[in-house]
Length: 336
Image (cartoon, rainbow, N blue to C red; front, side, top):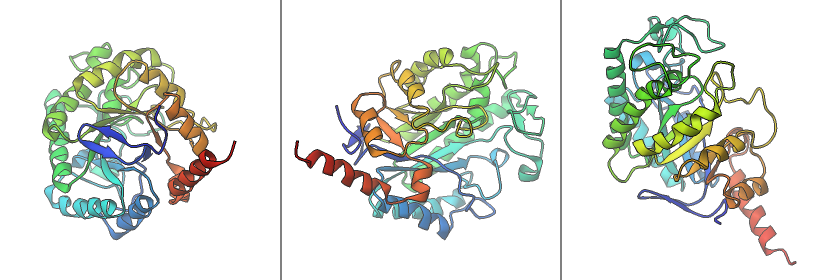
C-alpha cells in the first residue's frame, strides 16, 4: 500500500504527496473579499514547508452567502486576478492549489450581509442566534448558479482542485441535515429530498470544471447532535456523491463545527472517514488533530484513508511536512 509521502493521481492531477492543508479561515481578506499580501505570505509558507495540496479557506460565492468579515470571496470577476496571483505563489513553492467554495446559508448575520439570513427552514444551526427565513426555490436555483460561476472563476484563476463545502452547518450541509431542513417540497423530506440541492450543485460544477480538474466535497458525515444527520444515512449518501461526479470526499463532522471542542484524541474523524471509504471507490481524506507522522503514514498504508489533512499543526509549524518526511525516511533507513 502507498504511504503518506507517495504521490497520488486524481483525474489529470498528480499530487506529490498525500498531505493536505485543509481550509481554515484566516479573516485576512479585504472588505470586498479580495486577496491580500498577508494571504500570499501565509499560504506560501505552508507550500514551502512541503505539503502536497493546499485548499484555501472557505470562499463565498455570493454576497448573501458571506459568513463573516474578512472572508475570502469568489463572487465577482474582479477577484480573479488576486486569486490567480495567490495560485501562482503557491505553485512556485511546490504545492498544488485548491479552493473551497461555500455559501453560509443561515450561518451569517444581518450585520455581515445586510439582510435576514436564509436557510432551508426557519431553524438556526445550533449556536447561531439569528432566525433564518426559508429560501425560495427560485433563490435556490440562483444560488446553484452562483456556485457554478464561482467554479468558472476558480478555473480562470488556475486552481488545481475545487472543493464544495458541505460540512460544519453551511448551506449544503444545512439542506442535507434533518435538524435544519424541515421543508415539505422537493428539497426536503427524506434524505433523497434533502440531498437534492447538493447533487444539483455537484452536477453543474462538475460540468463547468471539465475533465481534468478534480472536484472534492467536504462532507459533514455525522451531525453529532440529536435529530441530525447520522452515519447510517451518510453511508448511503456517499455513493451518491461519487455517482454525481465527486472525485474525493473530504470527511468532517459536527453540524455547528468540526468537533475539535468535543474531541482531543488524534485522528478523531478517521473512523468516520474509514466508514465512508468502505462505501465508495474514490479517495477519502482523514482529519482530526493529527500531529504524528507515524500515525498519519500508518492510516494511509492500512487503507483507512487515502490522504491526511494536517490543520492546526500547519498553522503553528509550516515546515512540519519536511520534518515528517525526514523522520519517516530515517526510520526506514534504520538498521534492523
